[in-house]
Length: 299
Image 1 (cartoon, helix red, strand yellow):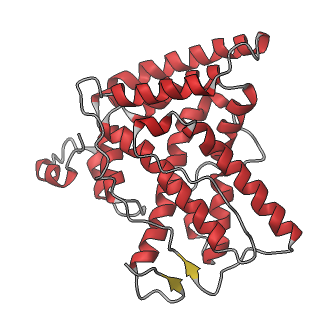
Image 2: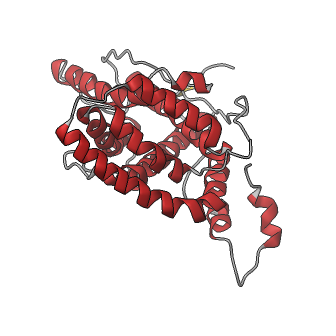
Image 3: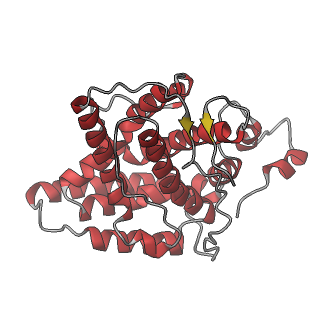
């Protein structure tokens, strides 16, 4: 259950301040308020304090064993369908409502950010595969794999057209924010059974070995490396907006220098945060009706 940090402010103990309350109250980083509550509540959970360190060690050991197994038998186990059935089952039965909210939101805002870039570069024509899951059944349709493929295919198709048509990304005459939605996810009811206790980082650490086992080595490595494309997407957006300020919020950088897959879980959380902050910047632009040159659709 999401903790109301605003109410907990009254319980503030100056001798023992809650670090997550401090970060929730801090507004230096743009982020959706519901997302911030969920993330700080997730960080403040017993699962994060007690289960996460154990699961993290277990995950690294299992990943090493799977790495050896895949070296000798690279094609023996390969089933994206089984993987996503496991992910759907695990998310529904064991992951906390806060963590599920953060995971489901990520696909929605990721889709909208790519649509924003495509719509604001005149002369390019990009048709993507929008991912906006609303139920755990939607996860079974290769959701996580498609998310990674969408990102790489977007970069390849975009830059192929930029090169072919000699187009340079720059601020358009009017910025189109029609695809950006202000969604608080109050229409999705995530399970709150006694088993739904696993926090976000623990869930990612638990699922990563399954990801490694049931995907090909190419799929798994590509998924891990895709996290560093945060910098690439942020650069595209800064070129469109003509303002590079949000680049400072990106931590997954330098996609031409791959990072070990053993850090994928931590970097995935950073990836989610980078997407949330960028999306919130676009949401704030859309809500500012007086902003010059912004296309805001009629309600």
